[in-house]
Image (cartoon, rainbow, N blue to C red; front, top):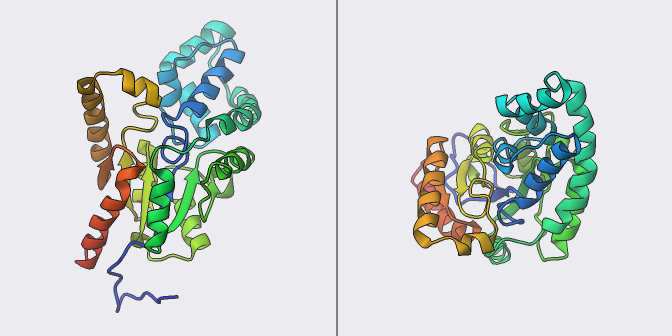
Length: 277
Protein backbone atom coordinates (compact mmCIF):
# COMPACT_ATOMS: atom_id res chain seq x y z
CA UNK A 1 0.00 0.00 0.00
CA UNK A 2 1.33 3.43 -0.95
CA UNK A 3 1.99 5.63 2.07
CA UNK A 4 0.66 9.18 2.02
CA UNK A 5 2.18 11.98 4.08
CA UNK A 6 2.05 15.75 3.95
CA UNK A 7 5.76 15.70 3.10
CA UNK A 8 4.86 13.66 0.01
CA UNK A 9 1.48 15.12 -1.05
CA UNK A 10 -0.86 12.99 -3.11
CA UNK A 11 -0.96 13.97 -6.79
CA UNK A 12 -3.23 11.31 -8.21
CA UNK A 13 -4.54 9.43 -9.98
CA UNK A 14 -8.06 8.90 -8.58
CA UNK A 15 -8.13 5.73 -6.50
CA UNK A 16 -11.83 5.18 -5.84
CA UNK A 17 -15.33 6.38 -6.64
CA UNK A 18 -18.38 6.23 -4.39
CA UNK A 19 -21.59 5.78 -6.36
CA UNK A 20 -25.10 6.41 -5.18
CA UNK A 21 -27.58 3.67 -6.07
CA UNK A 22 -31.07 4.68 -7.30
CA UNK A 23 -30.86 7.18 -10.15
CA UNK A 24 -27.08 6.91 -10.41
CA UNK A 25 -26.17 3.24 -10.82
CA UNK A 26 -29.59 1.56 -11.08
CA UNK A 27 -33.26 2.55 -11.41
CA UNK A 28 -33.22 5.14 -14.19
CA UNK A 29 -35.27 8.10 -12.97
CA UNK A 30 -35.11 7.05 -9.30
CA UNK A 31 -38.63 5.66 -9.62
CA UNK A 32 -38.60 3.02 -6.86
CA UNK A 33 -38.14 5.13 -3.71
CA UNK A 34 -40.41 7.94 -4.91
CA UNK A 35 -43.21 5.47 -5.65
CA UNK A 36 -42.89 3.86 -2.22
CA UNK A 37 -43.02 7.17 -0.38
CA UNK A 38 -46.18 8.25 -2.20
CA UNK A 39 -47.78 4.89 -1.37
CA UNK A 40 -46.86 5.07 2.33
CA UNK A 41 -48.68 8.38 2.73
CA UNK A 42 -51.63 7.07 0.70
CA UNK A 43 -51.91 4.16 3.14
CA UNK A 44 -52.26 6.82 5.83
CA UNK A 45 -55.06 8.54 3.88
CA UNK A 46 -52.84 11.46 2.89
CA UNK A 47 -52.29 12.13 -0.82
CA UNK A 48 -48.84 13.53 -1.58
CA UNK A 49 -47.46 14.37 -5.00
CA UNK A 50 -44.45 12.71 -6.58
CA UNK A 51 -42.74 16.12 -6.45
CA UNK A 52 -43.32 16.33 -2.68
CA UNK A 53 -41.90 12.83 -2.29
CA UNK A 54 -38.82 13.63 -4.35
CA UNK A 55 -37.90 16.96 -2.75
CA UNK A 56 -35.76 15.58 0.14
CA UNK A 57 -34.39 12.62 -1.86
CA UNK A 58 -30.94 11.52 -0.79
CA UNK A 59 -31.69 11.59 2.93
CA UNK A 60 -31.96 8.46 5.07
CA UNK A 61 -35.46 6.97 5.19
CA UNK A 62 -36.54 8.45 8.53
CA UNK A 63 -34.94 11.81 7.80
CA UNK A 64 -36.69 11.81 4.42
CA UNK A 65 -40.10 11.15 5.98
CA UNK A 66 -39.46 13.79 8.64
CA UNK A 67 -38.51 16.35 6.01
CA UNK A 68 -41.67 15.59 4.04
CA UNK A 69 -43.84 15.90 7.14
CA UNK A 70 -42.34 19.29 7.94
CA UNK A 71 -43.29 20.81 4.59
CA UNK A 72 -46.28 23.11 4.91
CA UNK A 73 -48.27 21.43 2.15
CA UNK A 74 -48.00 17.92 3.60
CA UNK A 75 -48.45 19.15 7.17
CA UNK A 76 -51.74 20.74 6.14
CA UNK A 77 -52.91 17.62 4.28
CA UNK A 78 -52.15 15.51 7.33
CA UNK A 79 -53.91 17.96 9.64
CA UNK A 80 -56.98 17.93 7.39
CA UNK A 81 -57.21 14.16 7.92
CA UNK A 82 -56.14 13.79 11.55
CA UNK A 83 -56.78 17.21 13.09
CA UNK A 84 -53.15 17.83 14.01
CA UNK A 85 -49.72 17.81 12.31
CA UNK A 86 -47.78 14.52 12.04
CA UNK A 87 -45.80 13.58 15.15
CA UNK A 88 -42.57 11.65 15.65
CA UNK A 89 -44.73 8.66 16.57
CA UNK A 90 -46.49 8.93 13.22
CA UNK A 91 -43.13 9.10 11.47
CA UNK A 92 -41.85 6.05 13.38
CA UNK A 93 -44.89 4.06 12.24
CA UNK A 94 -44.35 5.08 8.63
CA UNK A 95 -40.67 4.10 8.82
CA UNK A 96 -41.70 0.56 9.72
CA UNK A 97 -44.02 0.46 6.71
CA UNK A 98 -41.37 1.94 4.43
CA UNK A 99 -38.88 -0.77 5.42
CA UNK A 100 -41.09 -3.64 4.32
CA UNK A 101 -42.57 -1.99 1.22
CA UNK A 102 -39.21 -0.61 0.07
CA UNK A 103 -37.50 -3.99 0.43
CA UNK A 104 -40.25 -5.55 -1.70
CA UNK A 105 -40.35 -2.81 -4.34
CA UNK A 106 -36.70 -1.85 -4.79
CA UNK A 107 -35.69 -5.19 -6.26
CA UNK A 108 -38.09 -4.46 -9.12
CA UNK A 109 -36.18 -1.23 -9.82
CA UNK A 110 -32.66 -2.66 -9.95
CA UNK A 111 -31.83 -2.49 -13.66
CA UNK A 112 -28.44 -0.83 -14.24
CA UNK A 113 -28.62 2.57 -15.94
CA UNK A 114 -27.18 2.69 -19.47
CA UNK A 115 -23.40 2.65 -19.40
CA UNK A 116 -22.99 1.53 -15.79
CA UNK A 117 -21.48 -1.90 -16.42
CA UNK A 118 -19.06 -0.57 -19.06
CA UNK A 119 -18.09 2.37 -16.83
CA UNK A 120 -17.35 0.11 -13.86
CA UNK A 121 -15.23 -2.13 -16.10
CA UNK A 122 -13.25 0.84 -17.45
CA UNK A 123 -12.64 2.23 -13.96
CA UNK A 124 -11.53 -1.11 -12.58
CA UNK A 125 -9.11 -1.52 -15.49
CA UNK A 126 -7.56 1.77 -14.33
CA UNK A 127 -7.18 0.38 -10.83
CA UNK A 128 -10.06 2.44 -9.41
CA UNK A 129 -12.10 0.80 -6.64
CA UNK A 130 -15.91 1.02 -6.70
CA UNK A 131 -17.61 2.11 -3.47
CA UNK A 132 -21.26 2.90 -2.91
CA UNK A 133 -23.48 4.76 -0.46
CA UNK A 134 -27.24 4.74 -0.08
CA UNK A 135 -29.99 6.27 2.01
CA UNK A 136 -31.58 2.83 2.22
CA UNK A 137 -31.37 0.80 5.42
CA UNK A 138 -29.51 -2.51 5.64
CA UNK A 139 -32.60 -4.66 5.08
CA UNK A 140 -33.55 -2.74 1.93
CA UNK A 141 -29.98 -2.81 0.64
CA UNK A 142 -29.85 -6.58 0.96
CA UNK A 143 -32.75 -6.88 -1.48
CA UNK A 144 -31.33 -4.30 -3.89
CA UNK A 145 -27.78 -5.63 -3.89
CA UNK A 146 -28.97 -9.17 -4.50
CA UNK A 147 -31.14 -8.09 -7.45
CA UNK A 148 -28.45 -5.82 -8.96
CA UNK A 149 -25.80 -8.55 -8.71
CA UNK A 150 -27.88 -10.84 -10.92
CA UNK A 151 -27.79 -8.07 -13.53
CA UNK A 152 -24.02 -7.66 -13.44
CA UNK A 153 -23.41 -4.92 -10.85
CA UNK A 154 -21.66 -5.46 -7.52
CA UNK A 155 -19.50 -2.67 -6.06
CA UNK A 156 -16.43 -3.39 -3.96
CA UNK A 157 -17.88 -1.61 -0.92
CA UNK A 158 -21.52 -1.21 0.10
CA UNK A 159 -22.44 1.26 2.84
CA UNK A 160 -25.95 2.32 3.80
CA UNK A 161 -27.32 4.89 6.22
CA UNK A 162 -27.98 2.33 8.98
CA UNK A 163 -24.26 1.40 8.98
CA UNK A 164 -23.16 4.82 10.25
CA UNK A 165 -24.22 7.36 12.93
CA UNK A 166 -26.14 9.51 10.42
CA UNK A 167 -26.84 9.59 6.71
CA UNK A 168 -26.43 12.43 4.22
CA UNK A 169 -25.42 15.20 4.19
CA UNK A 170 -22.96 13.94 6.83
CA UNK A 171 -19.81 12.38 5.33
CA UNK A 172 -19.81 9.19 7.40
CA UNK A 173 -20.84 6.82 4.58
CA UNK A 174 -18.02 8.14 2.41
CA UNK A 175 -15.55 7.76 5.26
CA UNK A 176 -16.72 4.17 5.82
CA UNK A 177 -16.20 3.45 2.13
CA UNK A 178 -12.66 4.82 2.42
CA UNK A 179 -12.04 2.50 5.37
CA UNK A 180 -13.54 -0.52 3.59
CA UNK A 181 -11.51 0.14 0.45
CA UNK A 182 -8.39 1.24 2.37
CA UNK A 183 -8.14 4.42 0.31
CA UNK A 184 -6.76 7.78 1.42
CA UNK A 185 -6.50 10.74 1.29
CA UNK A 186 -10.15 11.63 0.71
CA UNK A 187 -9.30 13.81 -2.28
CA UNK A 188 -8.16 10.63 -4.02
CA UNK A 189 -11.87 9.73 -4.17
CA UNK A 190 -14.84 10.94 -6.24
CA UNK A 191 -18.48 11.00 -5.09
CA UNK A 192 -21.00 10.49 -7.91
CA UNK A 193 -24.71 10.99 -7.34
CA UNK A 194 -27.97 12.39 -8.65
CA UNK A 195 -29.24 14.48 -5.71
CA UNK A 196 -28.19 17.66 -3.94
CA UNK A 197 -27.63 15.53 -0.83
CA UNK A 198 -25.10 13.43 -2.75
CA UNK A 199 -23.17 16.56 -3.64
CA UNK A 200 -23.21 17.81 -0.05
CA UNK A 201 -22.13 14.39 1.23
CA UNK A 202 -19.13 14.35 -1.08
CA UNK A 203 -18.14 17.93 -0.34
CA UNK A 204 -18.40 17.35 3.42
CA UNK A 205 -16.12 14.33 3.02
CA UNK A 206 -13.47 16.36 1.16
CA UNK A 207 -14.01 14.50 -2.11
CA UNK A 208 -14.41 15.51 -5.73
CA UNK A 209 -18.09 15.48 -6.70
CA UNK A 210 -19.95 14.71 -9.93
CA UNK A 211 -23.68 15.42 -10.19
CA UNK A 212 -25.75 13.40 -12.67
CA UNK A 213 -28.59 15.36 -14.25
CA UNK A 214 -30.37 12.99 -16.61
CA UNK A 215 -30.85 9.60 -14.96
CA UNK A 216 -31.84 10.51 -11.44
CA UNK A 217 -34.20 12.13 -9.02
CA UNK A 218 -33.90 15.72 -10.21
CA UNK A 219 -35.31 14.94 -13.67
CA UNK A 220 -37.32 12.04 -12.28
CA UNK A 221 -38.30 10.44 -15.58
CA UNK A 222 -37.93 6.96 -17.03
CA UNK A 223 -35.97 6.43 -20.24
CA UNK A 224 -39.25 6.17 -22.17
CA UNK A 225 -40.55 9.41 -20.67
CA UNK A 226 -37.33 11.22 -21.53
CA UNK A 227 -37.51 9.92 -25.09
CA UNK A 228 -41.09 11.21 -25.38
CA UNK A 229 -40.02 14.77 -24.57
CA UNK A 230 -38.80 17.07 -27.29
CA UNK A 231 -35.00 17.59 -27.40
CA UNK A 232 -35.37 21.27 -26.55
CA UNK A 233 -37.48 20.48 -23.48
CA UNK A 234 -34.93 17.91 -22.30
CA UNK A 235 -32.06 20.38 -22.75
CA UNK A 236 -33.96 23.06 -20.83
CA UNK A 237 -34.69 20.78 -17.89
CA UNK A 238 -31.14 19.41 -17.75
CA UNK A 239 -29.75 22.94 -17.83
CA UNK A 240 -31.84 23.87 -14.78
CA UNK A 241 -30.65 20.78 -12.91
CA UNK A 242 -27.04 21.53 -13.82
CA UNK A 243 -27.40 25.05 -12.43
CA UNK A 244 -28.76 23.69 -9.14
CA UNK A 245 -25.91 21.20 -8.85
CA UNK A 246 -23.27 23.81 -9.58
CA UNK A 247 -24.88 26.21 -7.09
CA UNK A 248 -24.63 23.40 -4.51
CA UNK A 249 -20.88 23.16 -5.19
CA UNK A 250 -20.59 20.21 -7.59
CA UNK A 251 -17.16 20.16 -9.21
CA UNK A 252 -18.48 18.51 -12.38
CA UNK A 253 -21.87 17.75 -13.90
CA UNK A 254 -22.78 15.05 -16.42
CA UNK A 255 -25.96 13.63 -17.88
CA UNK A 256 -25.20 10.06 -16.79
CA UNK A 257 -22.65 7.63 -15.41
CA UNK A 258 -21.38 6.88 -18.94
CA UNK A 259 -19.66 10.30 -19.04
CA UNK A 260 -17.75 9.84 -15.78
CA UNK A 261 -14.56 8.09 -17.00
CA UNK A 262 -13.67 11.15 -19.11
CA UNK A 263 -14.38 13.44 -16.15
CA UNK A 264 -12.19 11.34 -13.89
CA UNK A 265 -9.34 11.79 -16.39
CA UNK A 266 -9.79 15.55 -15.91
CA UNK A 267 -9.67 15.10 -12.15
CA UNK A 268 -6.45 13.08 -12.54
CA UNK A 269 -4.96 16.02 -14.42
CA UNK A 270 -6.04 18.46 -11.72
CA UNK A 271 -4.58 16.26 -9.00
CA UNK A 272 -1.28 15.93 -10.85
CA UNK A 273 -1.04 19.73 -10.81
CA UNK A 274 -1.60 19.84 -7.06
CA UNK A 275 -5.28 20.84 -7.17
CA UNK A 276 -7.64 19.82 -4.36
CA UNK A 277 -11.44 19.62 -4.29
